[in-house]
Image (cartoon, rainbow over all chains, first blue to last red):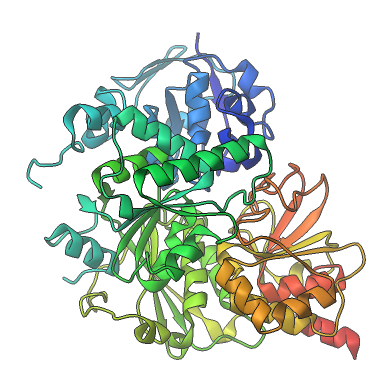
Length: 167
Length: 416
C-alpha cells in the first residue's frame, strides 16, 4: 500500500533537489536519485511509485527549477497534499501532472510512514478507517490534467484550457 | 474602483480591463531561458513538436555555471549555442553576465512589458516596472512555442518605503526588512507594488532592482516599483503605467527608511531577518559579493570604499563577481577592481557564481559565508550544514576585513 512521506513547513526546492545535482550537472539519467539528498538521504531509494508527499506551509518555495518536482515525478510521485504552496512550484506540479491538493486538516491527520489509498481523480483519500474528501484543483488545471499535462493539452488543442471561450 | 500596477499592465496587454482573480492569456515580450534549465526547455519544445514562434523574443543566458564546471555542463552549453544558432534566438554566452542584469542592460526588459524567466528572481524586472515573473521549463517552453502565457491576475500587496535611507543602510537592508515584515509566504501568488515616497524616490535603478529582486522571497509573482526619480529619465514611461489612487490592495505595509538599521538574514530562511548587531562577532570563512541582488557597479563601489586601505582578514576568502561584463568593464575603468585586488579580494567571471552551490566557491561542512545574494537555504551553497548569512555589500565588506560579521561603522570604532 502507498505510504506517506511527511515533511514540515517551508520545504524549498534546494531541499527537494540541491542545485549541484541538477540534470545538467549530473546527467538526465541520474538527477532524480538525489531527491532530498540533504534532508532525507533514504528518500530516493525508499520511495515507491504511488507514495504521496505530505507537506506543511509554503511548499516548494525558492528556485523555479522544474527539475526538482520532475525528480519526484520520475520516482513515481502523482500527488502532494500540503497546507499551502509556493507559486512557481504549484505551476510546475500541474505542468508535470502531479496533483497539488491543499488540505491543512488532512496534513495534520497524517504521519510519516502512514499507509494510505488515494483516488486521484475523485480526490478521495483513505487512511485506515478514515476517509477524507480533498478539494480537487480548479477546472483550468483539471482540464489540462485530463489530457495528462498542460503540454499534452496544448499539443492536442493548440491553445490553453479555457482560451477562446469567452476570452 | 481603480487598478493596481499589475492589473494595469495585464489589462493593457489583454486589451480589456482585468482584475485580481481572473485568468488571462497574454502575449509576452521576452522569454528568458537560463543555462541550467535549457536542456529541459529543449526537451519540452520537442515534446510539443514546436519551435519558438518569435525567435527574437527568446533569449538564452549562460550564467548559472559559467564557465562550464564539468563535461556534462560543457555539453549542455555547447547544445545551447548550436540550438540558438539553429533557431535564430539570442544567446548571451559565458562572461556576459547574470540573466536579469543582462536583460535590463540590453533593453529586452522594458517598463510596462511582460518578461517570463526560467528563474525565480525574474521579479527583478519589476525594478523598472516591467512585469517579470519566474516559471518552470514547461511554462517557458509553452510561452516560446505560443508567444503567450496564462496568468491569474494577482492580488496586490502595497509596500511603501518612505524617507531617505538612514546612514549605513542600503537598498538591501530595506529589501530584507520588507521580507521580514511580509514573511516568506506573505505575498504568495501576489504582486508586491512598491511605492517610494518622501525622499525614497531618489533610489536608483540599481537599488530598485534589488528591492524587486527580493520580493520573490516573500512568495511574490512579481514586484513592481512604481516609476519615479531616475526611472523617468532613463525610460519613456507611458501615462497608463501607474496604479490608480483608488486601487484595491490585499494588504498595505509601510517601511520608514530613515529608521532602518543594517539587516542580515540568518540561516536557513530568508525571512529570518535580524539586526546585524544581533549576530555581530560570528566568525566568517568566505565573503561573496555579487548576484542579481547586489552585483552591480554601485555595490562594488560600496565594497571598494570600505576595502580601500584595508586588507581582507587572514583566513577569509573574499570573492567578488560582477553581475555583468558591463559592470566588470566599468569597475576596471574607474579603478574599483584595483582597490578590491589590493585588499586581497579575488574577481570571478560575471555570472551567478557560487550562489546555488555549483562552482566558484562551494562551502565545506561547518563553514560560514556572508553573501550579498538572496537565498540562505540549507545546503544552498554546498555542504548541508554550511551557514549563509545574507547582507548588504557594506556589511559583507566589513565582515571580510574583520573576519567576523560586523558593520563598517564598527570597524571604524575598532580603528580609533
